[in-house]
Length: 450
Ligand code: UD1
Ligand code: MG
Image (cartoon, rainbow, N blue to C red; front, side, top):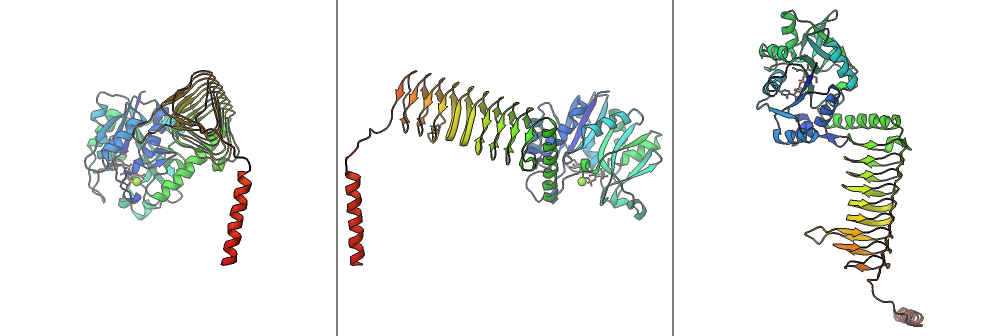
């Protein structure tokens, strides 16, 4: 059975107290919406439809970043969850499989749970995901009759007796596409909120004699984010899970609770990560690489056997080949560092290529920016860049070239050449001693007078 996803993301999320649409707030460096979309990946959806409303343009853009094939349905007015799903009808035209409905602000539904819902669909026309709530609060309540889900009552419309039920609605629903839209056509808005409730499809399905089942999951999976406090708690939950996953995948984390991951972080087996490392979005680290303490990595690739840090910053499009060494207080941006090259101390390499086996001395800077344009520095193989060299880009250093310490290199250096771009040193014999004596005498005279 093929599956399509409908992800509801039209709500404003007023309790976030934010100008930004709720589903665009990030955890693990990715918008909540991307997490929800990722959760559905396990079902290998044929189509993914995101229903936008508040901040539609920005939400659609984030959805397309997460999945370029996503279909966008617009809900101009937020008239309720059933109305939101109805907006996806056109995008699902001609689709005959099952639809799974997810919320854009509910990032943690597990793949196993979605698999169990798919299985339960073999026995029921409609399957709803429920959970036992520690504090049922304002969730919709599931009214069961034996194994059959008879209806869902929204908190606002519930009696005291119904409010005492602790089995709650997560919002996740799975149903055949054709049946789902037929059921939604029968949903009205005669209720306490004056909204078209998706939850009403349960009672309507039962009236039609259709079977409706409930699958239960852990409450943590249905955690919806409505406030900044919940966002912060979700970040903690995400990081806890990401750390556990990394350990399970054979990555050594010396102090797991101090490592921050992004949704898309990929780290190979037997990589070692020291304390206090941040993996911002877009990082891949291959097996056997070592990231020492206090590094910040973003949008970069670290190959097998490479060593980074402590205290290094890898910015977007830094590519470290195998066995590269990047040491302390080094920043690398948009640069390819080839196999075995070393950039060990206090250096900025930006918009550059560093060839195989080259050694970049302490304090080297690629002067890549002229205030308007960025320029490239190209360093060949086995080049030795002396400490404190300023490489004023655009500039090229040929294979096996050297630069003297403290040089300002403004012109290309041919292969095998030594470039010296600094003032010539002059020694004045005895001058230091004489100068000191004069200064000390001056100080003594001033003391006498004062
Ligand atoms: C909904 C459920 C409730 C369940 C709870 C779980 C209904 C009627 N109620 O209530 O049973 O316990 O979720 O969190 O379905 N949305 C739209 N367009 C709309 C309305 C909502 O896209 O017109 C989206 C929201 O952005 C959100 C989701 O649907 O992602 C749920 O809407 P929300 O208003 O939070 O529903 P609840 O009242 O929490
Ligand atoms: Mg809600």
